Length: 215
Image (cartoon, rainbow, N blue to C red; front, top):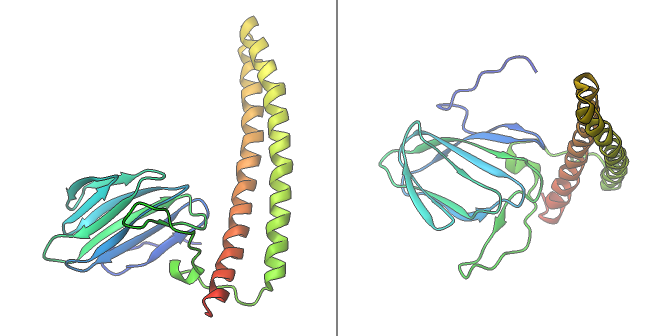
């Protein structure tokens, strides 16, 4: 990957898009307002770099300027409006980035159907060559692999929790540390596999979204 350096004055786009995180620089023109939405899985962090932005998060409003940051947590409806006299430029990140990434709401507060977006919406080239059947197979394989890792993780937690409890009771710190580390190794394997599944899911849904929109 090298060591790319990004500049908010020129790199107005999605910069890093993975299942773990989507991060970007965003520019909003004077008077522009982004529709209220929420994220089912992700926290969203906003850092203002230029201009004045009014945020509304779960009905509470706040005015942010350069150097100030706010956060919309999972499930919190939020919107932003440029209330200054110059374009607003901000850095934002959403973690994790798993489709459907945005949940939209009606004015009456009714949750709208899930919206799946092509990867091009996030400045990621669309894989139009791989057959959808192959993408579906990759997704199912990743789901089965995660299920196996989860089963192994649960078994390791039970076994090592018992070892940890016994080690703490006898004051054997070395054994306690070893048990804790084995618990983490199993958790790490499961979480790593979960991101493989998330990528396969994003690839599949992005392609389906592109096909249903005819693009």
